[in-house]
Amino acid sequence: MALLTDDADWEEEWAKPPGTPPEFNVVSALQLGDAATLLVFFSNPVLRDGRANILCDIRITRPNGIVSEAGPLGCFNERIAGPVENLYLTGMQVVVIAEPGDPSGLWVLDIGVRDKERGVRVPLRMSIGIDSTGSVTR
Image (tube, rainbow, N blue to C red; front, side, top):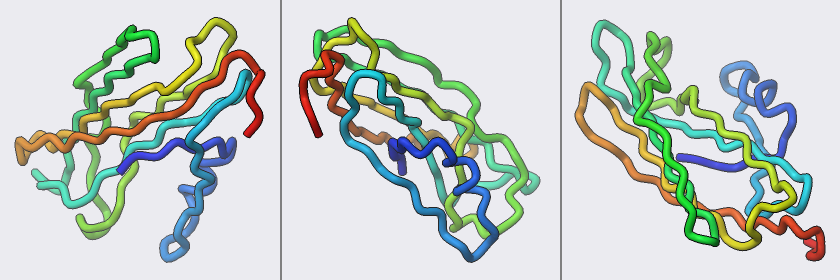
């Protein structure tokens, strides 16, 4: 699972005590100067010695066709304290900022979450509308 949130305090929200689900403000569009953080989650990893070993990759395609890619990189290699069926946050957090000069339009994010022990990559695709001109209201 992946989401884009404009919550500045998303880390506090994620750190709520067990049994208190976090509530994130999910965004699908940004205007000039707005920022959002991409959060990537996983569940049900295969454990080795009690640890999950997760790799993440991302490919961002801008409206003008320019592509940026990163990974695969280790984004979670920790001991799992609770049930593997719980939702866990990877270390992959990407901040998206609508800046002057960015191409306006739909930005597509192709994200991969790979359980290294299982050998399975789960592809995720999402998009965000960016208006870097400041002329469109929400």
